[in-house]
Image 1 (cartoon, rainbow, N blue to C red):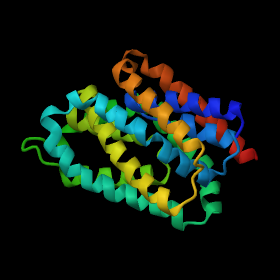
Image 2: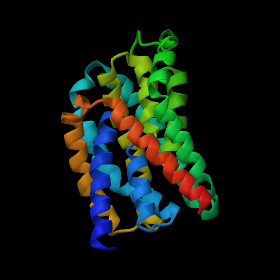
Image 3: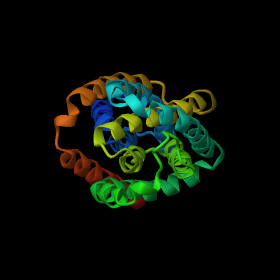
Image 4: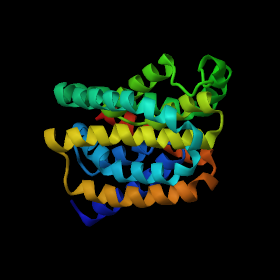
Length: 253
């Protein structure tokens, strides 16, 4: 890996850590960066998951003051998040690498569409907020099942996982900052689960992992403290354009 490659990974990790803390979609920054320095898609994915764990933890810690009265529900949805993350990561390991390579452009385009549609999804879903019962601080079966399915996607690929979780918890909790706090914790659980599996059973690039780890942790701290002041639209559309560009490149290559 050249010094230029290392610098690109450090920069991507910092931006991704900050984005994940604020709006999600940080994988749409780091995954293309890892592909650009020559890593195969599966290696890029497992390397990305391991490298972004510190950033996920930093983002979750930075929003801890937003959790307050919703901690009981957070404890209930942690288990389906763990199970879903484990399932998604297992799929990465057991399915042929060519399958993952073939589906990456599709996943990137889906992730880009979800990121672009985030404001609409949140507004649309908020109209059905009454279907999720918060009266006794219990997670409904709908919520538990939704978290499990999103966690499978997060363990398998991860891009825009935070966007989906933010929309889901925005429906449940109403306040965007509280929803962001829960989103960061659940995303951290999914990422840590997948990372542990990948560390022992796959072949990440152990040069890129610490570079991403240090930079994403720094970005997560900065993002959780200052990133909420940045316009969401700017971050969102930057991620969308990057994801579409990388998907096109993967299709044509």
